Length: 285
Image 1 (cartoon, rainbow, N blue to C red):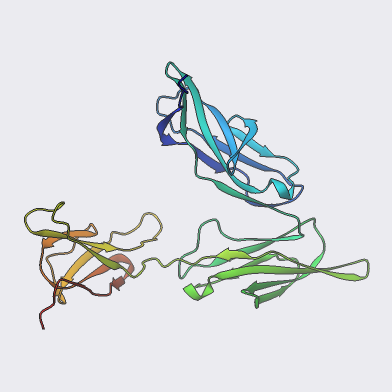
Image 2 (cartoon, rainbow, N blue to C red):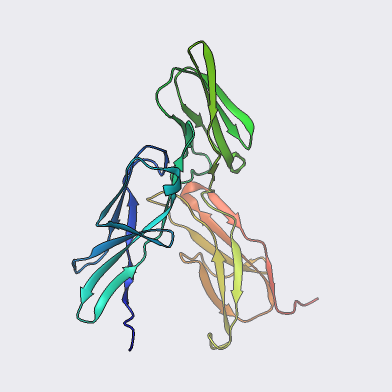
């Protein structure tokens, strides 16, 4: 007998963290929601997964109640519906990683990495509500800030790439004539440049490009927040500019040996970045 292979759509389910935190204390609860981007509004059922394990829960909403450490993992969802050709499924959603912490302190970092020049806000969440008298922030095991009182948030202004690292917090309080001190597990914090240093790719494939042409591609990471100002691309051969500024990151040029590079400029932000030069073909001596 022939087995029926489920049909898979071209679109992907989307899982959303409804709760505020993806790292929670054991005993806390968490809420995820799954949506199916189907313009035809078909009637989909929803399946949930932790890693490759199919979970018994069904439906748009997923809850972890009174969570245990062992319930942590990467959660995803998938839509399924019946049709005349059998079961049709969406592509499985990209996973959301959920951590369940059995300790007393959790350091909460921004869900999106801050940009160079931003203020980095880090908050130390504490199990219960003890009378805190001191909180210390560490980066890569070295003390960064120390503050007294009940304030559990830290603000690092005008951050640079050097501020990236593994952060943790230590919280101390007094109770029953004793001092208690707890420390969170490490949390990775990345810092992004608004405009990275570009690299140039020379793509010369005669089977793809005709008329003795090759393609210059200027790869760059641009992280400005919306509405992001426009980017201008410039291409160079032997330090001489090839044509005018471009709004796209590629340019078709004649196949010709030389040293190629690109420059990326964001005029409104006064940012300019150059690639390292790349040699193509045999350079004349």
